[in-house]
Length: 316
Image 1 (cartoon, one colour):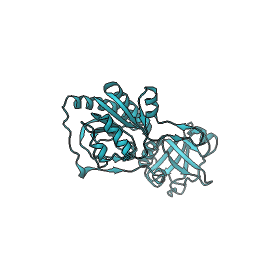
Image 2: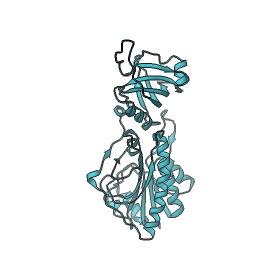
Image 3: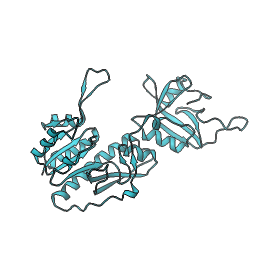
Image 4: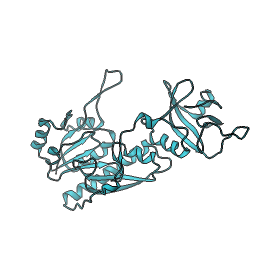
């Protein structure tokens, strides 16, 4: 089976390996190269590096509607195109070319979490289960028929990083099954129920800012759901930005000596060998790992020892 692969980040690599080993991979599409922060080094995507290492032709078009791009795909005349986290919308002219269509590995149980941030969203919303969907691409956003789903538990300790790694491997396993179904003519794809669809956009800076008036559950999920990127953040009264990467929920009612409710966002306790506790709507959040602006990542105990957070201090 002659194929083309389209993808960009690390998430796509296990699936790309499956396509490379099990099909006649003719061409790789990946997003344009980036330049590092200092502007002196070009950074290749993980997918591009894989193509270079395995001597596969690579193209990186700015626009997928370019006639040159469409003609190149027509020239190859692929049986199937596989897309995994490519980051570009495909026009109908391309969707109509492959004999068996275009399939996508999407990191949610569709129709839930169509769009750009399905892994973040599953943790942010406190879900206990997610998975991947192998689906056909059509003109709508993640709305095509689903070939199969693979399921995955979300544990209380999962972060965006750990769940990402689980799902990238699960996606490759699901893709392996889907390729066999397609080759054997055994696909029985199911239409999505659009009435149950939820759309998730890219994570914004506003979503990453911690509101200390929220519950401990919401803040805990926010911290792990944005770890490692973009990271939940707050600031102190000095105006320093602080990114928080790891926390623990504290089930305790914090009041002052007059039994008056303490303001949310206040450092109310120091737990030895662990870290500072911030008062929230229904208890506390123990900070276990944080990074102050311009500094290295620190454990909660080092934040205490360095007196970077003290009882009575307010986080904003």
